Every structure is written in C-alpha cells, then in structure tokens.
Amino acid sequence: MVRTYFLLLWTWTRAAAAYPASFALMNLLGFVTAAIDVAVILVIFANTTTLAGFSRDEVLFLYGAAALAFTICDTFVSNIDRVSSHIRTGTLDTFLIRPVSAWIQLTADRFQITRLGRILQAALVLGYAITALGLDWRRGWMIPVMVLTGIVIFGALWTLAGAAQFVLTDAPEVVNAFTYGSYQLSQYPLGIYARDVVRGVTYVLPLAFVNWQPGLYVLGRDDPFGTPEYTRFAGPAAALVLALVAALAWRQGVRHYRSTGS
Amino acid sequence: MRNRAITPRRCPTIPLYARLVRYGFRKHATYVWAALAGAFTNSVFGILRAYILIALWQARPGLAGYDMTDAITYCFVTQAFIGPMQLFGGGLGLPERIRSGDIALDLVRPAPLQAWTLAEDAGRAAYLFLVRGIPPMLVGALVFGIHFPAGPGRWLAFLTGFALGVVVSFGWRYLIALSVCWLLDDRGVAVVSLVLTTFFSGMMIPLHLFPGWLGDLAAVLPWAAMVQLPTDLYLGKAAVAQTLALQALWAVILIGLGTAGTRAIRHKVVIQGG
Image (cartoon, rainbow over all chains, first blue to last red; front, top):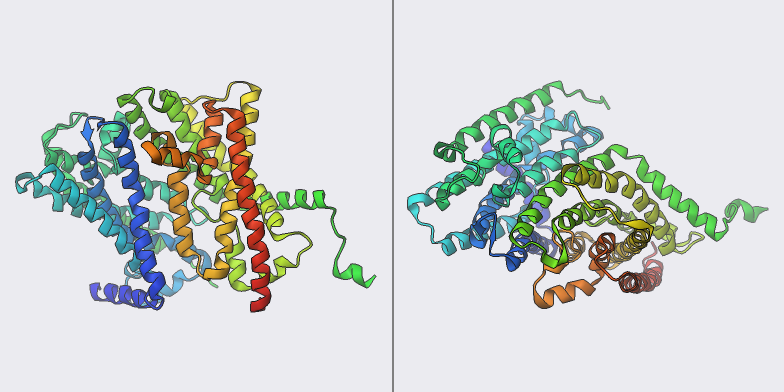
C-alpha cells in the first residue's frame, strides 16, 4: 500500500519534471507564497512587541509548528479535495475499480512535488524560532510529537473534507473554510480568539492540539483560558479520535457513492 | 443581403456593452452555489482575521488612525472585495482561449478585445459584489458590529472608488492573462501576481501598518488602488479627490498598457496563425 502510494507520487513527479524550468520556478514560488504569512506576522510585530501576551518568536514558533504539519498534509493528502470534480466528470469510477484503495490513489492524485518549497519554508521558520527561544530537550521533546499530531489532525481534516464532497458536489469550496480556515486559525496563539471559539476548537474540532496546547507546554506557559495541565498531553488521543471519525466518514462516502453511470 | 447574414445586426456601441455586462452577470449567476460557498469561506476568514486585528488594536489602540471598530470594519470590507476584485487572480477566460487558439476568434469580433473583456468582467464583479460581497459584511455587522459610511456623500465616494478599483484589478489581471501569449504557461506569473496582490493590496493587513519606506511605497502602487484606497474611502479616512485621482491614474496606466498589449498579440496571433 505504502509502496503503491510512493510509486504514484513518483509518476506524477516525473511528469512534472518534464518541464524543468517551470518545475524549479514553481518550487521557488511556493516558498515565496508561503512566506507571505510570515511577512504578515513580521509586519504585525513591527507595530507591537506582544500579541495577546506572546512575543514575536513565540508566535513564529506556534506558526512554524502548525505550518510544518499543514504543508506536509497539503502536499501529501490535500489532493483528495478534488473528489467532487472527479464525481462531476465521472472519473471517480476508475479510481474505485482499480485494485488499490481509493484514498491512496486520490491523495496521490496529481501530486505536486513543487509544494516541497512550502514545507522547507515552514521548517526554516520553526528552526529559527526554536533557536531564538533557546528551547532545550527537557520540554522540546514535545515538538516532534506536536508536529506528528498536527499531521494526523490536518490529514483527518482533509479526509473529512473529501468525504463531505460526496454530498457537496455543487459547492466543494465550502470545505476550504474548514481546511484552510483551520490552518489560518492555528497560525496565531489561540489566546487572541473568543473563549467560545477556543472551546469549540478544543472539544469539538481538536485544532487546539495542533500547536496551542502542546506549544504552551513547550513554552512553559499557562493557558489563559485555564485548561488543566494534562490537556497539554491530550493531543495524540484527540488526533486519533478525529482520524477514526474521518476514516468512518470516508468509508460512508465511498459506500454511498452512486456513479452517474456514464 | 448576403452581408447581413455574415455579420448579423451590428449593435450600436452602448447597448452592445450594456448587453455584455448583463451576460457577464448572468454567466456567473449560473453558479450560485459556488458563489455562496465563496461567501461562506470569505466570512469565516473575515472572523478569523478580525480576531488578529482586535488583538493588535488592543495592544496598540488608535494604530494607523483606526479605532477598534474601524479595524474590524476594514477586515470585513476587504474580505468582501475578494470576489468582485478577484484578488486571488483569474476571473478572465483569456488564458484558456489563448492556449486553445480561440483568441483568434475574439480578435475579429466587432468590438475591441479589451473593452469586450472589461464589460464582461464588470458584469462578473457586479454579481460577485452582491453574492460574495454583502454576506461577509453582514456577518461582520452581526458578530462584531462594523461601521457603515455616514451620509450619501461617503457612499458615493466609496462606490466610485470601488468601481475604479474593479477597473484597476481588471487592468492588472488582463495584463497577466495576455502574458500567456509569450510565456505559454501562466501558472508562474499567476503565482507572482497572487503574492503581489494579496500582500500589497492591503488584503492581509492594512498598508498603514507597513514600516517605513515599505509603507510609503505600498501606498502608491497599483494594488493599493484595489483594496486599501476604496476601504479608506469607505471608512472616511482618506482625502476623497486625491484618492480617486490616484486610482484613476492607475486605471488609465494599466488599461493603456493593456491596449498596447492587445495590439501586440494581434501581430503575434497573425504570425502564429492562431
């Protein structure tokens, strides 16, 4: 299964590399596009020293952790959000009759290796923030855990988005509000949002565990909303539950899919 | 008689463009669910961005001459602009038509390509203003409370600035679309345009916050004429005549460049034979 996935990725990469100049340019541009969000953070901190009590480097740390997880999912999973266009054009049927899981095929569908530039950008920001804040391994062991948790959460979100498109064939853009919106939300300390919003993304859609809760532990800070200490470590469990829900939703979607019979 | 069969009933100029505007409107009105989905996404992002600005204005009250409500209003007005101004690029069918060669057909139509496209784009902008522009503003008004322009004079200034902004945005996107003629692949240019437009229009964050020379520069670039200037007219934070003049200047420059570009592709198309 994993082999098939990488074989598909390799196929799409070879196809893209047929135009080497465009290939290099797209990688570079991906890097620059992703840098806009950082530029916005820097502009904000050109006007203030703290945002909701967090310093520039702390915000960059939270941003970097969320961005690394998100861009990895954006590269390797997000292709699944073209489900609705496959349904409309009737090409979904081909995916379903091949002897490989539809999820594997769709996440690798039209894989763009040129998005690696964004992952690199996120990794650089995170690396910078870790150095600038002088984080050590006593609390820093949480960083790889939180990035992995983030990958599972965002991967599950994309899968849910893909599953939702079995129903939302006419307006697939609705899911962008959840996928890209979740990313936008997790770029900043959740301390800036209203209490109810934060409650929602802690207990309903566990976005708080992408970088906020574990990030508070790494930075050694108290939660301004007063959640107990143990929620800092609840991330992996929350991610697992969301992944299960996403898997079930995806299964339901595929099962109830009716071909247009073209 | 034979002639009439080939060029059926030439429309007089004004009704022709009026009809094109209507067609542009109707063409997009077909995809009402897509537009509403876009409105939903713009509203959600409006709320998320508003919290960032609220946190910033809590730390620095009165920053850039805006009070808290001004900042929130700014956020939702700019979200409302995304659809009509096509801030993420595209909106014109030209790149596809250039690649497929259909552009040759467009060039022999009984109206200049640029004016034809502008008329259709104006129809598109009008439709998206209604369907993707108004909902984010309503959401902003309900969730946080926003300012509305006081008095008909302010409304008039804003709507004029908005219309000029749409023309500037069209002028820019038209040039990007024409570049396909020379570059054959528009993805690279489209990304460059996306970066410049989202960052320098003031869509992400008010240009007044940019430090030092970067702020001075950004305020006079064409992208400011798309978002920052009309929004300042909305908020009543800018000198009306001066702002409109700057916008008009950019509209004229970009449309002029577009006209030159159209002339150039006419030759290019003839050479390539379609």
